[in-house]
Image (tube, rainbow, N blue to C red; front, side, top):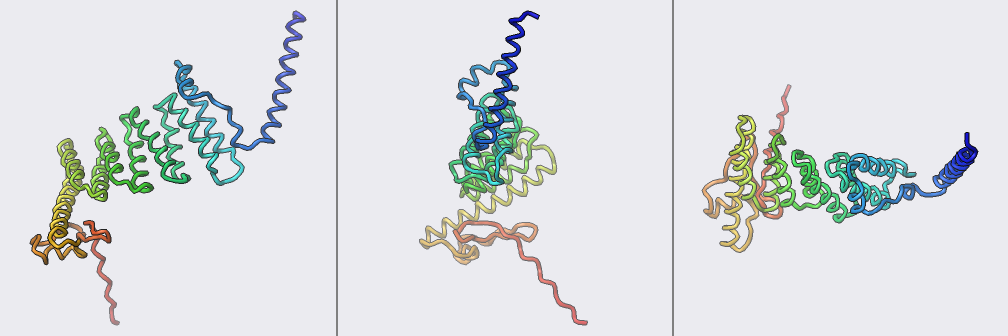
Length: 285
């Protein structure tokens, strides 16, 4: 062996040994949040990814998982959450079709510190849905976040509506979207959605479900219109739905199947409640 090559190999092995020693010390002395390798900006990553986008996105996503898994405490701190979300955003910036990062981002909704963080996650989910046009899941998650965490029912209804229209998706989301529109005081949009879904659906069971929901929300819209008339006439909202009949605004309260009935909630909005189950009678022996 040429002596120059022998010297080079010895130098490389020495450098590697020193590097590993320093790396062990680094891992012992630094916090978990600092252990990830700094990454260049997203635009630069997009520029250099070429045909290796899948591999590069996998590497960054593994880094996000390690950041989450290597923390010293069970609690996910804002610093850890911010670091992981940044890595997730870079992962999908390189490969927007990669599903796992979106699932992980949705898990962080439960650790969010406020609406701004939830909107950040929703922005990521909705952007991903623009690429994964065949997949209703991301739209459903974003819609759920708008409904459950942000109480923005109209936005939730729009996303559930889009998810329901994806071929092969869950048609039942149309009913959920209609419910969101109703809670957002826009029952008419829910009716339009249900009618459009009926025009596109041939399955008998699905049509039956949509027809029941359509009948329900048409009756609800009828009562909401009556409530508006009552307010205009008496300058105050009705406290009970029966007042609409007593004031001769409508002849009767529409009937619903399965023991359900309409009522006015605390805010004066029309809603549906289930009839209480009859109490069991005691038997004298």
